[in-house]
Image (spheres, rainbow, N blue to C red):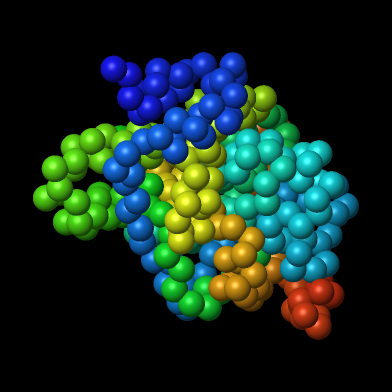
Length: 290
């Protein structure tokens, strides 16, 4: 008899032709769901990056947070690792043992030009990095069973050791770990090119099921674009609005000229975010990131 998990394993290479609703139903049918959780700790911070269109300058916290504009969501947002089309989700990066500068992780995760940099002779890109302080502990789902991430990330290895203490005595432990490995591997997929966002259907359906059916409203997972050394988070807007506070904002440039990379530079800094963080006061800044 084919189980829901067996079915999901059988379709993950043909997701273009499988309806999202069908995937969600199969996830809902899985028994003994594995929900390892961890904490984003009070006082720590999350870095988030948005790419600026030519000449674009962000002026308020809504523009550097999750997308608030419903028209933009409907028009531009397709499947992502943790979102379905048209869904607002806050993506960012946190400090990890191997990458202590989450802004670097956030940039590499966000910039498509960075991903294809070796194919390009010239690059001129401006991005805005915002730093958000965590006001209270936030419990999130931990995706720590990915084969690729376990091979590279000390954070993931240590987290797995800790999580096993909670379920290894259970009769269903083997199935639960197999389930967690499958979904973690979906979150760690590195075979998704532009135009292939449908390959995120399983991870998006999984986390949305968890968000709909549990108290967990966020997730942390290893960063594919840093070879699993960095750590990402995805949070629902309700969590961002309640538990995060915008602390600082800066603009940076990423350039490549005639095949040579220019060090990433800080070009502007918002010295005052304005009343209710709604009126950023930008000033030119000269200096390189080291």
